[in-house]
Image 1 (spheres, rainbow, N blue to C red):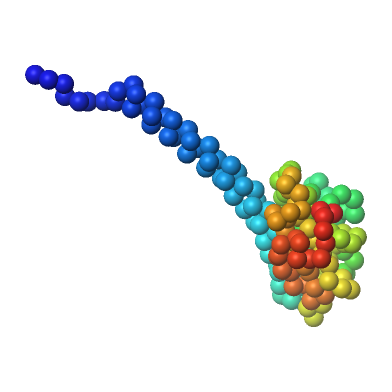
Image 2 (image 1 turned 180 degrees about the vertical axis):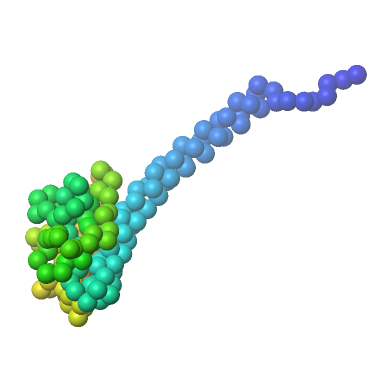
Length: 180
């Protein structure tokens, strides 16, 4: 009868594996870059969303609401460390930027990925929103998110205005030239 032609020869298998190897060599670095870019973009968007939540919470409760760098337990604010340790949004009835009895924590954001640094250009440990829509900051506040790749085109800048509006942009568009 003859050969039915089922299966691959060793040469065909080696050629297929070689093509697969070359494809992976080009695809994996791009995929790693995509993941890193998405990690920073997602984290920056999370922070802007938290600002919006604090502003909405203040308006809904007709009392101040604060976003601040959180303590390890997620129950209060700290002045030490950086924003990458996470943040909380809470109703701040007396507007003192501290979680007191009667204040409700409405968001406890987990720490950011260990590869991300997240700092502000000033010394902003918290931002308090008033029901009128104004905030405790007196001018535009700049936050910078970087990863191991440094400032370059990958870092994100977040501008926060007096009214609490946050916007994400390339860090180089903030006027700063390095990770903080």
